[in-house]
Length: 144
Image (cartoon, rainbow, N blue to C red; front, side, top):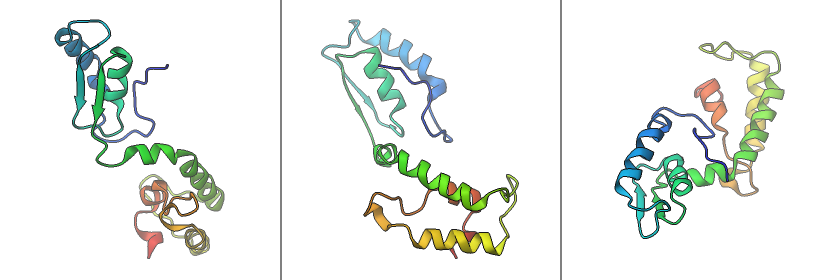
């Protein structure tokens, strides 16, 4: 199985830069090469990146991580998020605002609002209620 070095969706606070140090620490404190008989706990699990790597490094260890933000649900819905992103990209077309700019075109905003109103809420039919990309791209503007 592949060993990942970064989370699928980058975020502030990601622990990817600590992987080498965590591996060195675990190799010091675990007295066997496969982790048999050990439990490794990632209290600040986030995406599960450290827990994933710990399990790859020590396949016989029991690895537990804190999924407080339910990131496993987000990963399970990544295909839906990509579909939503594709829909929004189609609606915006070439009118994408600059990185710091706002989308002001009333027609595009109206079309986005219509698209949002047609989405199923709370994952009822498998669609996410609001893709993260909308919030980051438009702030709260399109939600009014």
